[in-house]
Image 1 (tube, rainbow, N blue to C red):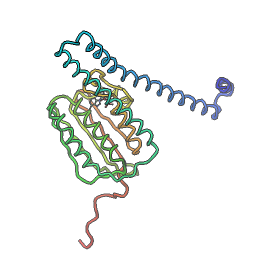
Image 2: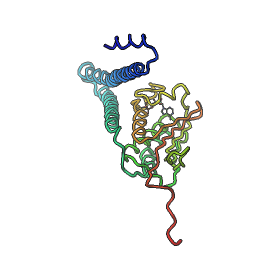
Image 3: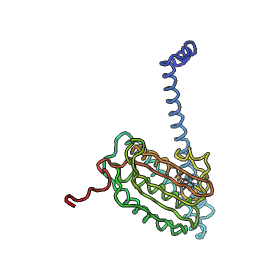
Image 4: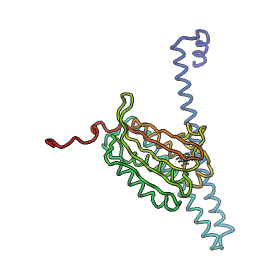
Length: 276
Ligand code: ADP
């Protein structure tokens, strides 16, 4: 059937309806290929820690049976592997939940600065551990029409990446600001996260939000990364009609900027009190 349609296309080149059909087919094929890739990647990511766990279980049942010191050491490694699998499954579930809601516009009026403050506080310990100075710069007020937990997740993933990959002893700056609309577009709330780490080479930038894409797989795994953080960010921003912009000059850090349309019910700074 499809072969016949393609044959027809070669016979009557340039007919827009046939070309459209083929284009749809290509995108359906591309989607299918992406799905197959995703399942293969996810299985591989789960299989690696699982194989390691199984290996340790067998060692504990056999050679290390009567070696208490080895047992403690192996159990500690097994715990890390089990936690890694848990994180991966949690991220996969988050992604699929966000995708399920992709076409349901979020409706809560969400104040962004308190969420940024919450994340800066909760990641304070990790930052201190790495000697990273984590700072928030924001004027209270900006609101978006959104999903509170999802916005929290965007900020968390971006700040955690900046702390993880931003290099020991550097500075990470989180900024929240309401920007005027450009070219007739609505005003935007910007969440910008800047680090002073090694940055990201330009050829990686367009692929960062792909599931399981990592610039340096070993370093990501060592940091406990799943390779899904920025994919989750992208899906959440899509649902909020927002955008993610990344700027980086290798050697001089990276800036990730999430832009989300400001809550329309919030026209700007509050009006002065009447009679004032
Ligand atoms: P991961 O779980 O590996 O952190 P992400 O999707 O959050 O996955 O990020 C994808 C990759 O992008 C990371 O593995 C890392 O290589 C790179 N990356 C993300 N944020 C930064 C950053 N601030 N500086 C340098 N590289 C980064």
